[in-house]
Structures are given as C-alpha cells and as structure tokens.
Image 1 (cartoon, rainbow over the protein chains, first blue to last red):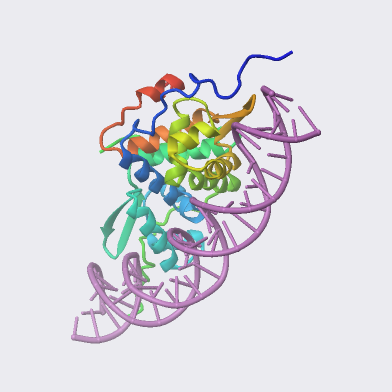
Image 2: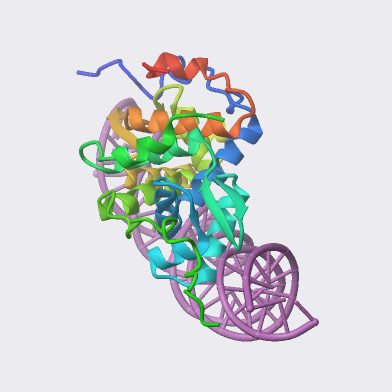
Length: 131
Length: 131
DNA sequence: ATAACAATTGAACAGTTGTGCAAGTGTTCA
DNA sequence: TGAACACTTGCACAACTGTTCAATTGTTAT
C-alpha cells in the first residue's frame, strides 16, 4: 500500500528559512571568534582560573605549570576577542574576565559539559555586579 | 642587600588559587570541545539556522548555498559534540538544536557579539523561557 | 529488482593554529 | 644609571582543521 505521504521535503517544509539575516552578519563572525578563542583546553582553564578572581601572568604560569611566554600568548588570543580585562598594578599586570557575558558563557558551557550542574559556587562571587 | 624577598606578587595576592580542581577535569575539556565546534563561522550559521526550527540537510545546503557533503561534514562536527539532534523522516534527516543549553550558548554569544541586544525574537519562540 | 534521491564517509590537500625559543618593552628599586 | 623583574612579541615548525571529491550507505518509488 503506497503511502502518499512525504515524497521528499514537502514544499511547506522548506519554509522561508532565508540565509541568516536574523542576526547582523558581523555578529555571527564575532561570536565564532569568541567561541574559537574559548575552544582550547589550556585557554579555557585560564578563563576558569580568572573566574575565581584577578590574577597576574606569573601567578597563572605557576598555577598551570607553564612558561610565562606561553601563558602570555594564550592571553593575547583571549584579549583579541575581548574576553579578558587588563590593568597594571606595579610590576604586575592583572587579568580578569571581561564582563558578565563571559562568565555566563563559561557557566553555561561547563553546565552543559557536566552531567549534573557543576559546583560553581566560587564563581558566583565574582559574577554579580556590572560596572 | 638580599632583602626580605618580594616574591613578586604580594603574598596575599597569590591566594589559594590551586590548579583548577574547581570543576571536574573532564568538564573543561568537553566544554572546550563544544566551544571549538561552535568556533567556526559556517558551523555557527548552521546552528542559528536550526535555532529557527528543524531542517533537513538539503534545506540547509540550499539556504547556505553549499554542497550537501560540506554541510554534512559540518553537522558531523556539531553532532560529535552533542550540539544537534537528529531524526529520520522518510528520505530526509531532520536536525535540530540538542537542548536548551545550546540555545543559551548561542543567545549569550550573539548578545556579547552585538552592540545592543540582538533581535532574537524568532529564537525565543522556539525555546527560551527565561531572560 | 533497479533507479533515483538523501545523506554520510574517507582521503588528500591547503590553510590555520598552538607552542617554544630568543629577543624586546616597560616598570620598579638600589 | 643600571640591574632585576614582569610581560610581550616575532618567528619557525609541528600539529590540527576545513573543504573538496569520489565512493558508499540507506531510503523510497517504479
């Protein structure tokens, strides 16, 4: 018995899903850049570190057991995408998460990557206010 | 002359920021994988397309003006990270966003990438429940 | 069964990216 | 001023990633 249903995608199935004019064209590229910068284990670890508060480069290098230069290179990528803030304090340069959006992205991805919701209680202390 | 060493950052600065035991070690790697998969313009466009509803591969290929194979390869990457759902409908295979986390990530990143909040009204109709 | 359509896969190539080293900038303190 | 510290940058090379083409699988219709 021939079923008359669904020969191929029904005409109305292929609705007016135009090329994505839904968001500004530049926005997608910028968002992709942000994701790309976060899409690296070592760099993402750096961000979670900063999620606990500001840190200077030496501190991060020590925590990660890496070379100063290596950490600096990673920070450069994050900086280029506007994911981290930077301020000088004497000899040191303190890095931090740029804004609440970055915190949210981190939180969301870690939540999705974990089975249950991750314990990010330490995070929240940082996250709240905006300036 | 050998003074009481100033071990770089003031002692209180270097607080108990241990290697990131804050989140499960695997979670960061998985989150990085998710970001990496989203960190590509063409793939991200695919996701925003799916943000408007399910679509088959041919439909996406048409919308993007790309080869079937190319789209399929992109979907494979997204699938490997669990970002999209898949179900067969006759000859066609319908893809969609995997879950609310993916929607949130998309929304967050586009919000951060846009100047003002982007017009994602079409998105909201699909899945969003909070603001 | 065969044909036609829908989608996936493997492999090869070009382009991109992360890392480590060496050299450079900027800051503090003697 | 000079020396020491804190970072940054340029460069070269290995490793990775996206795209394309050809071949393959799976589904529906004849």
